Length: 221
Image (cartoon, rainbow, N blue to C red):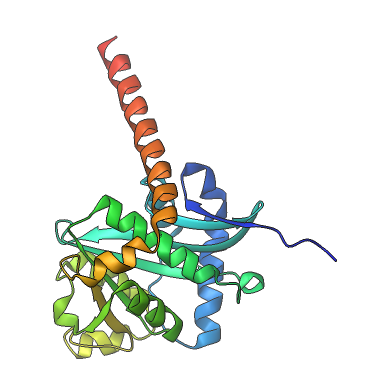
């Protein structure tokens, strides 16, 4: 019997840019199968998020297994977790939940005071959000940052959003508020994952600092 390959969930960096096209193709294919809309992202956009340390990627050895990313909006008062996807052959292994938890942890580390929000039409994602402490809200409770809503223009259901003046759409809006006491309970459940994610985040910040220092030395010369 062939041994199952271990799947590693991690914060992506520039070394993972080779997976971007596969990620985008996987997201598009999944949207077609579900028959639901999805905000399209460009190769350049996802690559930039990787360089900024805002992407969670799952790999089975060297093979792409899953993905999601985070981004802050409204002067960092809101943070969205978006684009959660698992490749077909790696589904039904609890991988989506591992990726979701990792992105949640990363977002809480980078923006501990921000409200985390999610727009999704998938029941599985709604369930994971609920387990993390998210609650359903109206679209009015989300960020009013036009840059965020512009990302919805690639969705096939965008006309619904525009016709209702962004009051509602096919997706369900959910928010995690760090002022909610339930946050403490849920976060303690993922202490090991938090430490692993924080270590990777600190390593990337150190590399960035070293690069900036090297650039400064070159300018001085």
